[in-house]
Image (cartoon, rainbow, N blue to C red; front, side, top):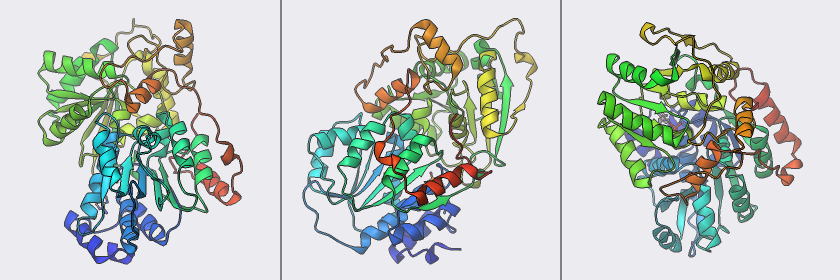
Length: 475
Ligand code: AMP
């Protein structure tokens, strides 16, 4: 099947050809025709599947079909994303595919000045790609008019909820017109996501891709058991002996990311940069550009900051520390092995993390191969300690899902400890990253969603039953 059968106009087909895509990915085959038709879509897919082109191409097609008069501050399409990086990436895709079309677009996110964003909006913009926090700031200053929104996209909705954006999203939804097309994409389908979907979507078409791009086959996974105090040494050895040139390394905390970066350079001469919510947007963009250009070998990231990163052919992902939430493991390793390429995911696991490893293996329903590295064999006399998520040890990413951490927090009396943020501490992403690294309570239910249409409910239930689906309920 080629793109020309999907209902896209010649200008878009020309741009696609120039990018070098010859065949639509499964999600593009399913989504493009129904989005052009104007249907609501519930998309079960994560990054790496070609999902971005799956919704940006048909949206551009729809935009080109009518040319309404736009008034000041009005917009036609709104794409909401959890992170600045993902917003920038979606905007870049739109620019690439819409190369031969007439439209205006802009990105809106925190960490940069608000005034230029307000000034651009004043002229009226066709497509806005935004993170929820800054968009709400702008809306509360009367800087944007949603009354003419024709299409709303919630990209990586699960991550937006994980980051604590539910209230912002609900407020924004209250400002949108009732008559509009809505597309919601998510990699996982927790009860909260189902609530959100059922409140927003009208008779949606379900488009779903199996998890072939996330774990099975293309990504080889391995665990090395190692003492916590020797992880950095082992990481440096792996990078040097295996001659890794581009490695994305995950830590649990922002402080941990900074520390590891510094030590890799200091002790092993390995060039690296950290990327997380406390870094200014300029520093994040530079770190990513340096990493993509090969100027640095290692990018150390926290889960939230890494979410939007799209690097073609990223060969290695290292879990320097395992995530507290098993779904994050799938998201992390999904950074490699994209669009059919081979990838390698290595996890350095200390004795404190054995329970987390078991939870990941239960979640992915697979046992991860363990390879013993003799020089780094764990010292059997070291006993497990509760995991500290942050400098004060007051963290519990994932709310009450991880019993170990919850009890640790209660013992420390740290449940309500205020997050520490230094740079950009007022941006919503920093706040949400702190929130997720520290105490996070389960989200409130959406009362509107209590009245779930039976049709959608059946589709959502069906997602849970599919054996090969990644859309399992969160524990
Ligand atoms: P996404 O899931 O949207 O983050 O896309 C993942 C990667 O696949 C990106 O680097 C895209 O450029 C690439 N991609 C998207 N669609 C296609 C396609 N039809 N053929 C080849 N590569 C694609």
